[in-house]
Each structure stands twice: as structure tokens, then as C-alpha cells.
Length: 163
Length: 82
Image (cartoon, rainbow over the protein chains, first blue to last red):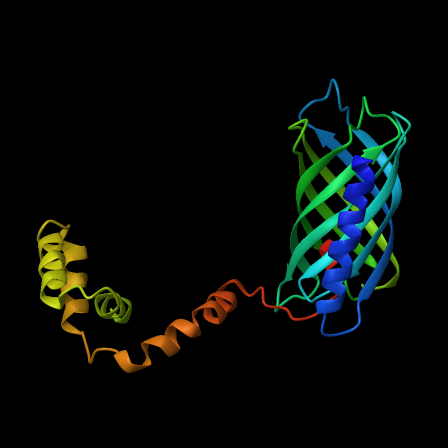
């Protein structure tokens, strides 16, 4: 029931933002791979993940983001969804920073507990001319319940929509 | 120095008080810094146009964004892929 309320709240928030948007929403679909490290290795061990991301840019700085990844070593499936405030460098449109809040769920709560987590994400294209679909992601995430901090380093391949 | 003058106008601090404080600081500063500060004080030019103060304040966020160069108005952000 609590989770349904959270999801309903997220959907209502997204609907509100969509109605205030001055132009059409811009979706993005990505395949990705992450290395993840945490400051609590006993309860949340490091792993290598494969999965995908979805983003919907509702306004030029507000986006709804979500992802689902599978941890290859601990064999868990996790997902998260939330909102993000993003700014992009005017002199380099292939470099941006976002600050957001996401709700995390997983198939193994002992390894990846359900919780809200605040995150800061840097995204940049290392070779935008030769490989425009490639984005490198550096993300720091702090769980508001477990107070565990996780660092993600990953690559994304854009399937469609946004870059 | 324009910033100093701006602050003086904004907060209503008497200019002579500010100059007195600066002179006191100069007296206790190393010789090189004191000389440079005196040279700067000697270059104080006309004060800012106070009538345009509100306009200057209204432009401040935009100016700050230019400083940080993070005012991209697009809707396709690399970090949204994370």
C-alpha cells in the first residue's frame, strides 16, 4: 500500500510537470553497464551490473528518470525511479550534472534494501563526434534509510530519443 | 572597486567609513599589497548609477549562470542517462 502511494505520487508529480511543460516531452532510452561500490561492503557488496535506463525530460531542467539493472556477482535485480534537476554546460552540451531523488527497490532486500536515495550524477560524452551514442556516467547515491553511500561508474549506449 | 562602490550604495555604508577601514588595513598590510591597494583606491571613478540598481540585481542570476556556464536550454542531458 505504501509503495503504491509512492508510485501514485510519482505519477501525479510527473503528470503535473508534463502539464506545465512548454514543449513536447523528450524521452531517452539507454542500455548500460555499471561498476558499483558502497561504503558498506558487508551488507551491500560491490558488483558489476547490466541493464538499462529511461529518462523523460519534462522541462529543460526537470526530468523523470528510471532504471533496472541486474547484479552479475550477487545475482539481484534492482530498479529505481524518481526525479532529477539537470543542468548542461552551455559551452559543451555533452557535459551535464543532475541532482535528484529516486526510490529504489530490488529482488534481494538484504543486498539492496527498498529506500529513497538522493543522487548526484555527472554525464559526459568522451568522444561525441565519433561515438555520439556513448555516455559515461559517474553517480553518487546516498540511501536515506540505510545511510549507505554508493558510487556508480558506467557507460550508456543511447537506443533512441535523447542523446 | 565597482563592487565596493556597489556594496556601499546597496547597504548604505558611508563611503568615508569604508575608506577609513581600508586605509587602516593598508597601513597594516605588507608594503607591496599596501602600494597596490593605494593605487587602486586612487583609481576610484564615478559611482554606479543607483537608479539602475534594481535592473542590475534583476540581471544577477543570469550573470551568475554565465559565470558557471550552466544555462543550457536544451532538453537532452547526458546525465539523465544515469
